[in-house]
Picture (tube, helix red, strand yellow):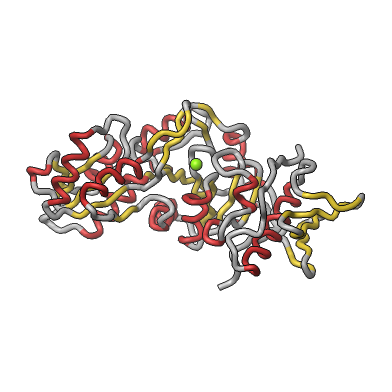
Length: 349
Ligand SMILES: [Mg+2]
């Protein structure tokens, strides 16, 4: 297998690919508010022929609710353009179901609807002898719900989690996500669940198939879910800097988390992406030249070398730096050769 690194695209991504599998939080919106440029970039991408399929690990909200929120933000969206982790979990249950399958749904309305939509029998308590427990996040979940899950799993039901994200971003900061509530159940049962949300590849494969896409591109802001899921599904992943993981996290990313493309925000869909190439130990991307020296990245500029963090860098310098840092880390056989990465900013363009 070739090294996990950036690739190039000599025309705009929105012309090269046929469907974008877009994460929501940190890519399209942050809480209730739209991310700057997201609505216009998606509008332009659609006009250029790139379909959009929104893919979210949030299992609490139904596709209809998500679609309404997007439409309110100026991104007209139908429920058929939304794939949730609840739908991915329901699809897994349905693929293994027989006439005796009874599902205990621990989660929100979105999870229950996704199971019912696939014709599954949903029960309310462990006393109904469920064969499967499907657990997704809802802000109203409490001890009685987790107790039902533990009773059912103790009696032999299998355990499926819509996702295992430890945290959930809220307006007030990071809150416990589904993975933290799943961990409480696992602590009690000792049984590890299967998970269907990102970074598992199935949710992306289902989303691409629902959209009728043959050349999908994943777009996300979180390396350990969106971009790891893209690598697992063997789809290229565009990482944008409008959400959780910033430039420093990208430069230190391990192979299975690395994006294929980098952009400041969704306007990167309308751009061609030059491929970083190695010239001896210097990585060249467009006009940018970067190499790793003494645990940091140094850029060769016309007026002399500049170390990482001294001045804002261009997007091509960021791409060259990522390729250089990753190659040096792989060659050294370590997670990252970089020592503390300073705060980084991109030049305005
Ligand atoms: Mg996100």
